[in-house]
Length: 334
Ligand code: ATP
Ligand code: MG
Image (cartoon, rainbow, N blue to C red; front, side, top):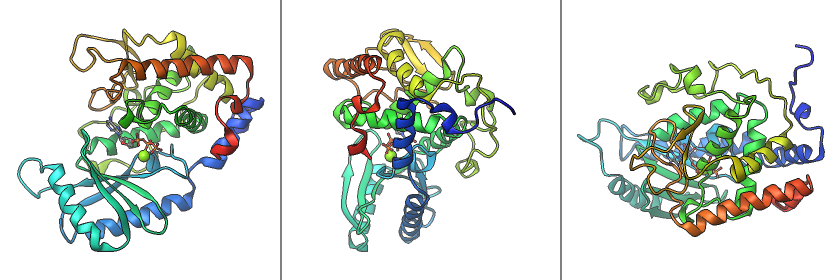
């Protein structure tokens, strides 16, 4: 309709916003990147089925959500059903897979990471493409579909998230294994900010379309694309640059880390209750399906202080000069 913004350029008339679009266009995952990941997934699935006939392999994470860069890894979820009674021990399965992968010839640097969700990490020879494979962590398939639906709900979501990921990476606060923020946590923080603006850029999709995000939906019924979800018609016409500035400012001064929990599921901040999930945690970000804390990796006061100081310093920097290069070296990033 007349007057309503419909292209990314409508949100990028100023310098900072234009720089964000430029970064996005240079870095976002290309169709050929996804094809390469998909080809390798299907080859792996076929090979794994010779050991575990009922195995299914799903591509998850930023490769599938539309929130990835060209350099993003490929997250894989191996779903085993009907193999044993009860749930198979993931460490055991991954150890078997590790031994099976070694002689295959097209994978290298295969190693097991014994995290809360254990993963097998490896690279595809030649392309250098990195994979993180988990076993039966099916919540990742559900939340990837949720993230993908948000990514397509408004044109500004993808460039915003890409800029925030690059910013956090540049400032070394994007590594859960080092006590800072996982990419997944950062994505939920951006979505929360966009949901809670006076004039929201995003709704709660779980509230608006409960049938699409039913947490007990069968894995195979989870759609690949957000076909059934119409784009959200936001009255908020803020530019990308204003949103980035607002995001940094929100977490510098508005959001209360000590009393609030980020809930993308509810589309608002919830008060911290006394449950063990939130007690004595510096940052509380609710997993939209399992409702545990995805930011539990931040467990050191020092790391928490570093994260807060990066938000505060970057807010100051943007107030002085609305130039993305002042926040992260754009050219070097591209
Ligand atoms: P990048 O582009 O940096 O690889 P990403 O969007 O793939 O980022 P990751 O943090 O690598 O994000 O997580 C990959 C996927 O794993 C997420 O999209 C999500 O589906 C799942 N995931 C990660 N952390 C959690 C968690 N704490 N709880 C549930 N699912 C998680
Ligand atoms: Mg990833």
